[in-house]
Amino acid sequence: MNKGWLTILLLSFVVTIMPYVVYGQDTQGEIEEEEIIIRKGKKLKLPPASRNYKKIKIETPKGIDQDIDLSFRSASVGLSPLDPAVRIKTLKPEPLKKLYGAYVKGGLGNFGTTNLEFYYENKRDKNKGFGVFVDHLASARGPGEDADLSAESHNKVGVFGEYSLFNSFGVAKLGYQRDHVNYYGFDQASDFVKDTLNLEHNFNRFNAELGLKSFNPGSYWFYDLGVVYRFTGDNFNTSEHLFDIDADVNYEIQPGLKGGVKLNGTISSYGADTANYSRNLIGFLPYVMQEKEKYAFEAGIRIVSENDTILQDDIHIYPVGLFTYHLLEKKLDAFVGVDGSPFVHSYHEVSMENPWIGQGVYLGTGNLALNLFGGIKGNLNKDFWYELGLKYKTIDRLPMLVNDFQDTSRFTVLYERGNSTLFQFEGLFTWQIHRSLSLDFEGRLNNYSMAKQDRPWHLPTTELTVRGNYLAKEKVLLKLGLYYLDGIYALDSRFRETKLDPIFDLSLGIDYFISDRFTVFGDFNNLLGKNYQRYLNYPVKGFNFIAGASYSF
Image 1 (cartoon, rainbow, N blue to C red):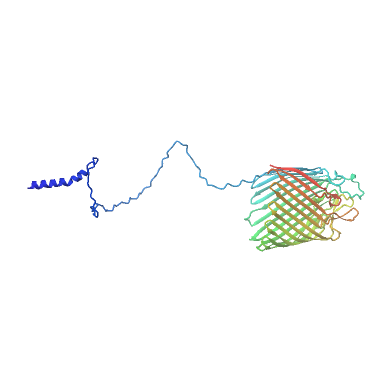
Image 2: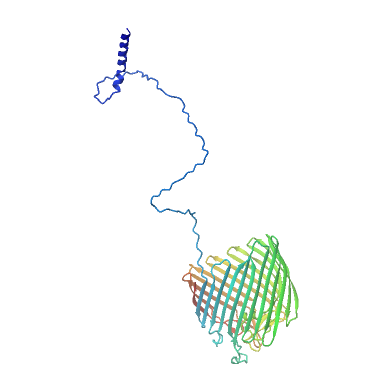
């Protein structure tokens, strides 16, 4: 019984698994014929899939307590090692303009004129500067019937230096100048024969200057100190030693308010074969100055001690003041002031103005007793600057040049006895019309009222100077000049009043820049060819020119 049931169960099991065994075998044999029946609407019911919904838990790694030392091994690939530099890209700075420390200039002209200039200065240096210069200008002939007699020559040589030290700026100069002229202005009505006279007049001039000025913006103190020594001598044993001293020291009491003192002095010794004497002035000026938004002023008292070998010693006291009111900021200022001071009429000054000065001429001191002035000034724009003013002056012992009555070819100095007055209108302006075009103007109208003399001899009543520059295409520089004087009176050998013809001198200059270093030039003077006289009996050259070249290196 049990065996029978066991046999039936075994057969049932074999029949059940047979299909699965057949599908699990290799199916690469022939495909047997099968019949597939598709029944519409029959629902397929799949057995449920076996899934595991248990969430996988990922444990968080524990922290690491010790530092990790990472090292990187360099691998050699057979190339030379590279060491690139990291650079920050910047704009390329503009190169400094080429600076030439020296130039030489030479030219030739009519009247046998020769011109030579040399200048040298060290190049860029923040702390110091120094240099040397040479200047020569001579004419073998001049105006007049005897052209050789009116020849002249002027030569200068000098050295200079500048140095900054301890918030100060120091300057030193040393120079020598030799001037040669001839006396050629003879009045034909005179009885003198020029061949019997020594007609040469030669000057030797020597100057030395020292200066020291502060430039410390953060300091309350300011100082400007200077001393000048001049020697002037000629071939007639006339000589002069002159010292000029200027000092200005002030202290900023509070912003915009300063107090200070100025010291001015002239010490001179002048003489010739006939006489020797000294003229000394020492001036002391305490002052206060203030600058406000709408106005500025400076006020003080000048005290001057005058010591003259010939004149009586004296003490002068002058009020000094300047008040400026800003009507329009940087465009229009109105100003009014008062001043005064004695002055030494030096041989250096006189002989530079008129080299035909005679021998043994008395040179004393004058006195600007009162100088009242006022006007307006400012900038209409950044290209136009102007100043218009009126001055009223009272001058004691006004110096004037007159022809010597014994020899009209020589001049002497005549001092007005008493106070003369001068009413003066003055106009100045500078106009940069265009980047390449500029114009300068300076004019004065002078009205003298004399104490004793009939006229202010050889002093003009009208003065006008005009200068213009035009740069064309960065290659050609045109220079225009106009010089005009009128109202000049003189005394002839017979004590007669003579009015000199107006002076109208027109000049033109042309510079052509071949390169930054090489320039050719031509200067043409007195284009109208007028032999005008600045001083009686001394006509000047007519049309004259100098042409040449200059080279920088």
